[in-house]
Amino acid sequence: MGAIQWLDRRVREMVREQRVDPMRRPEQLEELIESAVAEYEGLTIAGAVEPIGDDAGVRRVLRDEIGGFGQIQPLIDDPEIEEIWLNSPGKVFYSKGGSTTLSSIVLRSDQVRQLVERMLLASGRRLDLSSPFVDAALHSGERLHVVIPDITREHWSVNIRKYVVQARSLEMLVERGMLTGEAARFLALAMDSGLNVVVSGATQAGKTTMLRALLGEVRADERIVSAEEVFELNLDHRDVVAMQTRPANIEGRGEVTLRRLVKEALRMRPERIVIGEVRQAEAFDMLIALNSGIPGACTVHANSAREAVNKLCVLPLLAGENVSTDFVVPTVASSIDVVVHVRRDRSGNRQVTEIVGLTGRVEGSTVEISELFVDRGGGLVRGLGEIPKPELFERAGHDMGGVRWGSPLGV
Image (cartoon, rainbow, N blue to C red; front, side):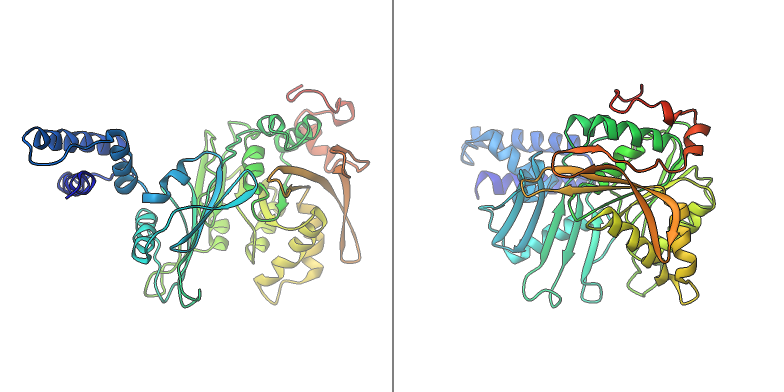
């Protein structure tokens, strides 16, 4: 038996004996590894086993295999890798710097299953023939999505999405070149004034990053209540309650939907309601909440700000036959104030390409929008559109008529 095999077995024995959670208590795992290595070195001196050789390499393998996710742990640890996905045990890809790379990692089918089981251990979510999809968050914050056969043809499909840019404020996004200081200043004032903001964009465009940065501008004395399918926002705020959905159990009971969370959020004294991503009928409950006077924010999949507005006029209709366009369209026009559209280019850079305001006016079944900031190919510049809800800015003490666009944040 080699050194790694012996040490792996011994450390796992100690983990079981001492009931240590190696993923959540890495410092305790390190102590067990140190103890096992010392024990092995004693056997080496006695001539019972071969020397370890690469001590640092062996320790790293033990950390990854017992306290991490085995061979893919180095990919998770790499701060520049944005996403990792497995199409089959022998095809492990990752995205880095906007380009896709096929790694040299080769797993066995049983290793993939064990890997997913370990990832789901702390989430409380299940994956079986009756529930072949799972969406969960890893203990370290990454988002996991898995699909199994016979939904997939043969192999398990695994996606691990990381959050490389952990911006907590709009100023941090300005430093990264995602938007201009002028646009960031307007958005900061809009959030402080309690306007309702929607962030739109395609998958991996940076919607969650932008939403997190926007919420970083909320005053510390405001209470935020968020509802997400899976915890992603991880807000750094003094007074925040985060909730996530729950799938039904094996008996088909206990499901908690996003619609339910939005309704419950209204009973929790919110001063700001946040929905991680609006996809279905929860759009109706969000409109009801925003129309009641509680400021809010959310994200939505769309290819433009106009498309996002149109989508928000359609999704609430899924709530029931008694919900009509005659109600939804004017409610969207009066409830949503600003849409921020983000885009990811082919090189992997994320940019804000549009910021539009909703004037509150409707032409037929079309909600009128005004361009506040727009990128026509040369960068984000101030548009000619009117600022929405100027009375909210005035109530918050911001004289928008006297704002010096382009001045530093906070001026």
